[in-house]
Amino acid sequence: MILKLALQLFLGTVLSALVSTLAYRFKLLTSDGASAAFLLGAIIFGTGGIGFALPLLFFFFSSSFLSRYKSGQKIKYKDVFEKTGARDKNQVLANGVLAGALSFIYFIFPSPSIYSAYLACLATVNADTWGTEIGILSKAQPISLRGFKRVSPGSSGGISLIGTASSLFGSFFLVLVGFLPGISPVPFRTELFLIIVIAGFSGSFIDSLLGAFLQAQYLCPICNKSTERKTHCNFDTNRVSGISWLNNDWVNFLSSICGIILFFLLQKICGN
Image (cartoon, rainbow, N blue to C red; front, side, top):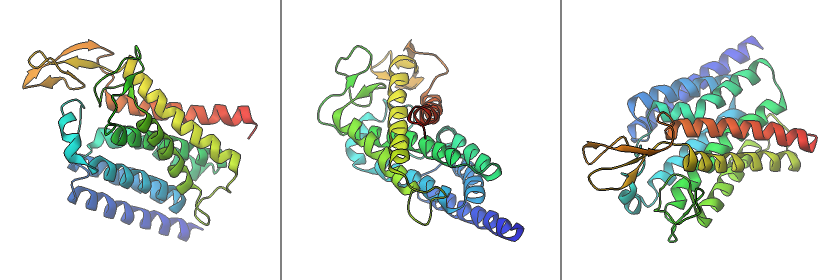
Protein backbone atom coordinates (compact mmCIF):
# COMPACT_ATOMS: atom_id res chain seq x y z
CA MET A 1 0.00 0.00 0.00
CA ILE A 2 2.79 2.42 0.95
CA LEU A 3 4.71 1.53 -2.21
CA LYS A 4 1.59 2.07 -4.32
CA LEU A 5 1.00 5.46 -2.71
CA ALA A 6 4.62 6.53 -3.23
CA LEU A 7 4.43 5.49 -6.88
CA GLN A 8 1.18 7.44 -7.38
CA LEU A 9 2.67 10.56 -5.80
CA PHE A 10 5.79 10.25 -7.96
CA LEU A 11 3.84 9.72 -11.19
CA GLY A 12 1.48 12.54 -10.26
CA THR A 13 4.37 14.95 -9.79
CA VAL A 14 5.97 13.91 -13.07
CA LEU A 15 2.69 14.25 -14.97
CA SER A 16 2.02 17.65 -13.42
CA ALA A 17 5.50 18.86 -14.34
CA LEU A 18 5.04 17.65 -17.93
CA VAL A 19 1.63 19.30 -18.37
CA SER A 20 2.62 22.62 -16.80
CA THR A 21 5.85 22.77 -18.81
CA LEU A 22 4.05 22.10 -22.09
CA ALA A 23 1.36 24.63 -21.19
CA TYR A 24 4.01 27.28 -20.54
CA ARG A 25 5.88 26.45 -23.74
CA PHE A 26 2.70 26.82 -25.81
CA LYS A 27 1.86 30.07 -23.99
CA LEU A 28 -1.25 28.71 -22.28
CA LEU A 29 0.21 29.70 -18.90
CA THR A 30 2.49 32.47 -17.70
CA SER A 31 5.61 31.50 -15.76
CA ASP A 32 3.91 32.01 -12.38
CA GLY A 33 0.78 30.35 -13.74
CA ALA A 34 2.82 27.29 -14.72
CA SER A 35 4.36 27.15 -11.23
CA ALA A 36 0.93 27.33 -9.60
CA ALA A 37 -0.43 24.72 -12.02
CA PHE A 38 2.48 22.39 -11.22
CA LEU A 39 1.89 22.55 -7.47
CA LEU A 40 -1.87 22.21 -7.83
CA GLY A 41 -1.56 19.41 -10.37
CA ALA A 42 0.95 17.53 -8.21
CA ILE A 43 -1.52 17.58 -5.32
CA ILE A 44 -4.49 16.51 -7.42
CA PHE A 45 -2.68 13.95 -9.60
CA GLY A 46 -0.69 12.60 -6.65
CA THR A 47 -3.50 12.30 -4.09
CA GLY A 48 -6.45 11.65 -6.38
CA GLY A 49 -4.96 9.55 -9.13
CA ILE A 50 -6.35 9.27 -12.66
CA GLY A 51 -9.97 9.65 -11.52
CA PHE A 52 -9.23 13.18 -10.30
CA ALA A 53 -6.62 14.03 -12.93
CA LEU A 54 -8.71 13.47 -16.07
CA PRO A 55 -11.52 15.95 -15.24
CA LEU A 56 -8.91 18.57 -14.37
CA LEU A 57 -7.02 17.97 -17.62
CA PHE A 58 -10.29 18.11 -19.56
CA PHE A 59 -11.12 21.47 -18.01
CA PHE A 60 -7.68 22.92 -18.66
CA PHE A 61 -7.26 21.79 -22.26
CA SER A 62 -10.86 22.39 -23.37
CA SER A 63 -10.85 25.90 -21.88
CA SER A 64 -7.46 26.64 -23.43
CA PHE A 65 -8.67 25.46 -26.82
CA LEU A 66 -11.85 27.53 -26.61
CA SER A 67 -9.94 30.64 -25.54
CA ARG A 68 -7.99 30.40 -28.81
CA TYR A 69 -10.98 29.36 -30.92
CA LYS A 70 -11.75 32.15 -33.41
CA SER A 71 -9.33 34.40 -31.55
CA GLY A 72 -9.38 36.81 -34.50
CA GLN A 73 -13.03 37.59 -33.80
CA LYS A 74 -12.46 37.87 -30.05
CA ILE A 75 -9.53 40.27 -30.21
CA LYS A 76 -11.83 43.29 -30.43
CA TYR A 77 -13.07 42.47 -26.91
CA LYS A 78 -9.62 42.09 -25.33
CA ASP A 79 -9.82 45.49 -23.62
CA VAL A 80 -13.15 44.61 -22.02
CA PHE A 81 -11.81 41.69 -20.00
CA GLU A 82 -9.41 42.19 -17.12
CA LYS A 83 -7.12 39.43 -18.41
CA THR A 84 -6.64 37.75 -21.75
CA GLY A 85 -4.11 35.32 -23.18
CA ALA A 86 -2.00 33.02 -21.02
CA ARG A 87 -3.43 32.33 -17.57
CA ASP A 88 -1.51 33.61 -14.55
CA LYS A 89 -1.24 32.14 -11.05
CA ASN A 90 -4.29 33.99 -9.73
CA GLN A 91 -6.47 32.55 -12.49
CA VAL A 92 -5.08 29.05 -11.92
CA LEU A 93 -5.66 29.22 -8.17
CA ALA A 94 -9.09 30.84 -8.47
CA ASN A 95 -10.28 28.00 -10.68
CA GLY A 96 -8.44 25.12 -9.05
CA VAL A 97 -7.50 25.66 -5.41
CA LEU A 98 -10.80 24.30 -4.09
CA ALA A 99 -10.50 21.28 -6.38
CA GLY A 100 -7.04 20.68 -4.94
CA ALA A 101 -8.37 20.91 -1.40
CA LEU A 102 -11.16 18.44 -2.15
CA SER A 103 -8.72 16.00 -3.74
CA PHE A 104 -6.55 16.11 -0.62
CA ILE A 105 -9.58 15.66 1.65
CA TYR A 106 -10.68 12.65 -0.41
CA PHE A 107 -7.19 11.20 -0.03
CA ILE A 108 -7.56 11.33 3.78
CA PHE A 109 -11.31 10.64 4.01
CA PRO A 110 -12.44 8.75 0.88
CA SER A 111 -16.10 9.50 0.25
CA PRO A 112 -18.26 9.48 -2.90
CA SER A 113 -19.70 12.85 -1.83
CA ILE A 114 -16.25 14.46 -1.76
CA TYR A 115 -15.48 13.24 -5.27
CA SER A 116 -18.89 14.43 -6.47
CA ALA A 117 -18.24 17.86 -4.89
CA TYR A 118 -14.89 17.90 -6.70
CA LEU A 119 -16.67 17.35 -10.01
CA ALA A 120 -19.25 20.02 -9.16
CA CYS A 121 -16.44 22.49 -8.47
CA LEU A 122 -14.73 21.81 -11.81
CA ALA A 123 -18.07 21.66 -13.63
CA THR A 124 -18.81 25.19 -12.40
CA VAL A 125 -15.60 26.74 -13.69
CA ASN A 126 -15.75 24.71 -16.90
CA ALA A 127 -19.34 25.79 -17.55
CA ASP A 128 -18.39 29.41 -16.94
CA THR A 129 -15.41 29.23 -19.29
CA TRP A 130 -17.35 27.52 -22.08
CA GLY A 131 -20.19 29.99 -21.71
CA THR A 132 -17.84 32.96 -21.91
CA GLU A 133 -15.59 31.77 -24.73
CA ILE A 134 -18.44 30.58 -26.96
CA GLY A 135 -21.05 33.11 -25.85
CA ILE A 136 -18.86 36.03 -26.87
CA LEU A 137 -19.17 34.83 -30.47
CA SER A 138 -22.97 35.16 -30.39
CA LYS A 139 -24.37 37.25 -33.22
CA ALA A 140 -27.12 38.52 -30.94
CA GLN A 141 -26.22 41.01 -28.21
CA PRO A 142 -26.31 39.44 -24.74
CA ILE A 143 -28.84 40.50 -22.13
CA SER A 144 -27.60 41.82 -18.79
CA LEU A 145 -28.94 40.13 -15.69
CA ARG A 146 -28.90 43.60 -14.18
CA GLY A 147 -31.76 45.49 -15.79
CA PHE A 148 -32.33 42.93 -18.58
CA LYS A 149 -31.03 45.33 -21.22
CA ARG A 150 -28.92 44.54 -24.24
CA VAL A 151 -25.22 44.98 -23.53
CA SER A 152 -22.01 44.64 -25.49
CA PRO A 153 -20.51 41.14 -25.88
CA GLY A 154 -18.08 40.37 -23.09
CA SER A 155 -19.87 42.52 -20.53
CA SER A 156 -19.88 41.03 -17.02
CA GLY A 157 -23.29 39.58 -16.19
CA GLY A 158 -24.39 39.41 -19.81
CA ILE A 159 -25.94 36.17 -21.01
CA SER A 160 -26.93 34.85 -24.42
CA LEU A 161 -28.75 31.76 -25.65
CA ILE A 162 -25.63 30.21 -27.15
CA GLY A 163 -23.56 31.11 -24.10
CA THR A 164 -26.10 29.58 -21.71
CA ALA A 165 -26.33 26.41 -23.80
CA SER A 166 -22.52 26.22 -23.89
CA SER A 167 -22.41 26.50 -20.10
CA LEU A 168 -24.79 23.58 -19.79
CA PHE A 169 -22.72 21.48 -22.18
CA GLY A 170 -19.54 22.50 -20.35
CA SER A 171 -20.93 21.17 -17.09
CA PHE A 172 -22.35 18.04 -18.75
CA PHE A 173 -19.16 16.94 -20.50
CA LEU A 174 -16.91 17.68 -17.52
CA VAL A 175 -19.03 15.45 -15.30
CA LEU A 176 -19.22 12.83 -18.04
CA VAL A 177 -15.41 12.63 -18.10
CA GLY A 178 -15.48 12.29 -14.32
CA PHE A 179 -17.64 9.19 -14.58
CA LEU A 180 -15.74 7.35 -17.30
CA PRO A 181 -15.89 3.58 -16.65
CA GLY A 182 -12.81 2.10 -15.05
CA ILE A 183 -11.48 5.55 -14.11
CA SER A 184 -14.01 7.11 -11.76
CA PRO A 185 -13.67 6.14 -8.08
CA VAL A 186 -17.46 6.50 -7.78
CA PRO A 187 -20.04 4.25 -9.50
CA PHE A 188 -22.19 5.99 -12.08
CA ARG A 189 -25.76 6.75 -11.07
CA THR A 190 -28.02 8.80 -13.33
CA GLU A 191 -29.54 10.85 -10.52
CA LEU A 192 -26.15 11.67 -9.02
CA PHE A 193 -24.80 12.56 -12.47
CA LEU A 194 -27.67 14.99 -13.09
CA ILE A 195 -27.32 16.56 -9.64
CA ILE A 196 -23.67 17.37 -10.29
CA VAL A 197 -24.39 18.71 -13.79
CA ILE A 198 -27.14 20.98 -12.44
CA ALA A 199 -24.91 22.16 -9.58
CA GLY A 200 -22.12 23.04 -12.01
CA PHE A 201 -24.44 24.83 -14.43
CA SER A 202 -26.15 26.72 -11.60
CA GLY A 203 -22.77 27.68 -10.15
CA SER A 204 -21.82 29.25 -13.48
CA PHE A 205 -25.12 31.17 -13.50
CA ILE A 206 -24.25 32.52 -10.05
CA ASP A 207 -20.94 33.60 -11.59
CA SER A 208 -22.93 35.72 -14.06
CA LEU A 209 -25.03 37.16 -11.24
CA LEU A 210 -21.92 38.12 -9.29
CA GLY A 211 -20.49 39.67 -12.44
CA ALA A 212 -23.65 41.68 -13.02
CA PHE A 213 -24.21 42.99 -9.49
CA LEU A 214 -21.01 42.83 -7.45
CA GLN A 215 -17.92 42.61 -9.68
CA ALA A 216 -16.00 45.87 -10.02
CA GLN A 217 -16.72 47.65 -13.30
CA TYR A 218 -14.78 50.62 -14.62
CA LEU A 219 -15.22 53.35 -17.22
CA CYS A 220 -12.35 54.66 -19.33
CA PRO A 221 -12.18 58.49 -19.18
CA ILE A 222 -10.57 58.62 -22.62
CA CYS A 223 -12.68 56.33 -24.84
CA ASN A 224 -15.70 56.09 -22.51
CA LYS A 225 -15.77 52.29 -22.77
CA SER A 226 -16.87 49.99 -19.96
CA THR A 227 -14.15 47.57 -18.86
CA GLU A 228 -12.96 45.26 -16.07
CA ARG A 229 -9.53 46.88 -16.20
CA LYS A 230 -8.21 49.45 -13.73
CA THR A 231 -6.21 51.06 -16.54
CA HIS A 232 -7.33 51.65 -20.12
CA CYS A 233 -5.88 53.77 -22.92
CA ASN A 234 -2.85 54.20 -20.60
CA PHE A 235 -4.99 56.04 -18.04
CA ASP A 236 -6.56 55.03 -14.73
CA THR A 237 -10.21 54.12 -15.14
CA ASN A 238 -13.06 55.19 -12.86
CA ARG A 239 -14.95 52.55 -10.89
CA VAL A 240 -18.65 52.97 -11.67
CA SER A 241 -20.12 49.92 -9.92
CA GLY A 242 -19.29 46.84 -7.89
CA ILE A 243 -16.90 46.11 -5.04
CA SER A 244 -13.36 47.36 -5.61
CA TRP A 245 -11.57 44.11 -4.67
CA LEU A 246 -14.05 41.78 -6.40
CA ASN A 247 -12.41 41.10 -9.75
CA ASN A 248 -13.00 38.20 -12.13
CA ASP A 249 -10.65 35.86 -10.26
CA TRP A 250 -12.62 36.33 -7.03
CA VAL A 251 -15.89 35.87 -8.90
CA ASN A 252 -14.64 32.54 -10.28
CA PHE A 253 -13.49 31.44 -6.83
CA LEU A 254 -16.80 32.37 -5.16
CA SER A 255 -18.87 30.74 -7.88
CA SER A 256 -16.92 27.47 -7.50
CA ILE A 257 -17.76 27.56 -3.79
CA CYS A 258 -21.41 28.02 -4.76
CA GLY A 259 -21.21 25.03 -7.12
CA ILE A 260 -19.96 22.86 -4.26
CA ILE A 261 -22.64 24.13 -1.86
CA LEU A 262 -25.36 23.62 -4.45
CA PHE A 263 -24.26 20.03 -4.95
CA PHE A 264 -24.60 19.23 -1.25
CA LEU A 265 -27.97 21.00 -1.07
CA LEU A 266 -29.33 19.14 -4.11
CA GLN A 267 -27.92 15.88 -2.80
CA LYS A 268 -29.74 16.38 0.49
CA ILE A 269 -32.99 17.43 -1.21
CA CYS A 270 -32.92 14.41 -3.49
CA GLY A 271 -31.94 12.06 -0.68
CA ASN A 272 -28.69 10.87 -2.30
